[in-house]
Length: 96
Image (cartoon, rainbow, N blue to C red; front, top):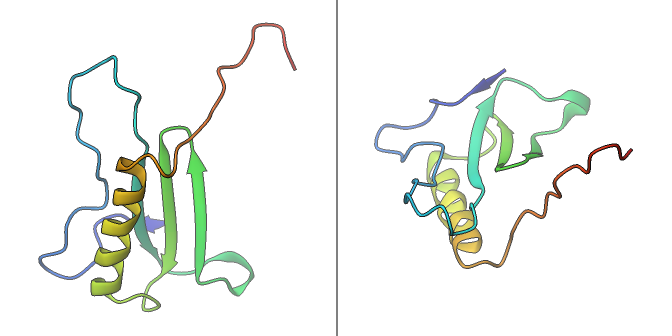
């Protein structure tokens, strides 16, 4: 459904977090914006969050390549600065 490589020439890639090799540092979620052909309910944007990733799906033509790049830079700054984190708890054995 998502086109992870769509965009204008010269845009930075979708993903964003490099592995620093420091296993003691908390894992920062990867932030991405992906173009799609359509979304349910006539929506033009839809956030999808999963452990370790936060992806915004955007219907093609509703965000310019420049706006996409600027948004990715701002979102990555927020994550790197610790202003937004994921707090996924590890499932407990035998718990529902």
